[in-house]
Image (cartoon, rainbow, N blue to C red; front, side):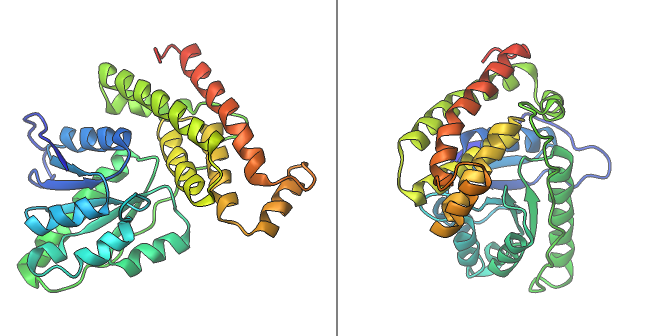
Length: 290
């Protein structure tokens, strides 16, 4: 677990006092973005790289809220939350908000059943994230004053607007990132995204294990969406779904795409390196030094 201490920032009127928040996320890129957003709001953010680290950190106590990714190595977010809810005292009652690119109703229900309090979608929307954080900090404070054993309810599941077909980069996402981050930090995270993407795409191209491919595609879907690489994000999402499908479903997906009986997973593995190259070229054409 690593710790990031934000600069001295005073909260604006109407916001809760600065709080200590644990960001549980295996992607260094997403850690940087979320902790930067929280720091701008005056909060102190620590990070954990997986669910196991999160449980160990929470046992020590002191957190006001936990932001939890779902798909992580070592221990996933759902398992970690179930273990957190078994902790005695205040540590077992800390609000847990899922941060995930999985935004279907079934995903919301899984989060609720694991003991999570709310669900925000990736790519992370700065205003929605801060509104959700502030809401649960206020609820936790009120519950602690009224009845510390009272369970919290589950909030609304956020949704992500679909990208327009054929759009390599989502300019609105990039414009929002430019507002949320200073120019130097934005350049740094974009460069790190490109470096990680090249490595991840190479692993996808050379991997045959469907479980590993599913995990790699899930992470690529999340990071590509965060940085507005829309066509790459869509292909990664399709690869994740194809890896989770049955053999018959994968074959049917290949037929629908015009590939005859070709396996959809293999087709998508072949597409993703080209789409990643297209995205990198589009960043450069837009003036980003990646």
